[in-house]
Image (cartoon, rainbow, N blue to C red; front, side, top):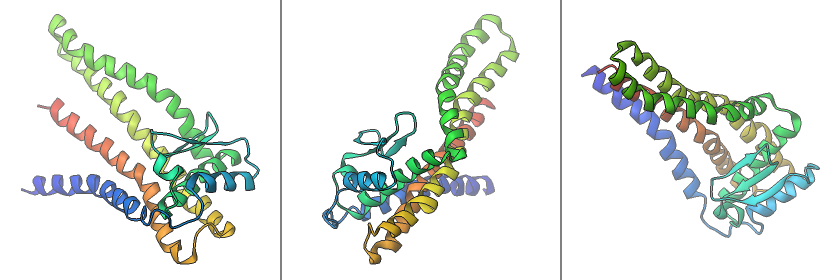
Length: 227
């Protein structure tokens, strides 16, 4: 009984942040014409005001993010063309990452380097997971289970590492960069600042939800492996 309660609590902790983030983002997408400028225009003006003219602003279907390799702030169509509080706040958050990059913020640099390795590492891990059943069937060596363990840790553990390293960069982008910037430049109405804080927290917590989901996947995979 206690185990069931713990599992329910853990699942709630995993799902809860994601649901809250989604609810906050959707809530402040309305009214859609709250501001005169779009998220894309605000991002461009903030970057230019910081002498970051080399950083591009682009529309993407892959979610709002800053690409440190391509030096580009990328926003979803709803935020790039939108005039809502969400659109402007998310734009400022991504500009915060561009400022980090320009300042040589170490957590962002470490994450960028780690991401380069994650793709190949996950491919190796996936390969080990695919080969393990066939190797066990052919050799009948129980120790081959270690290969499965290693493969699973490479696939799932690398995602957890990226998410964990992302958290300091996300919170700094929201509260160490974006929030002071929008206050200084008067981007948002004064009455919207408390709402902007919630949005900036939601932007940072997006990766908390991802990290918890990765941990849940590891726990699920480990339980299957032990059967």
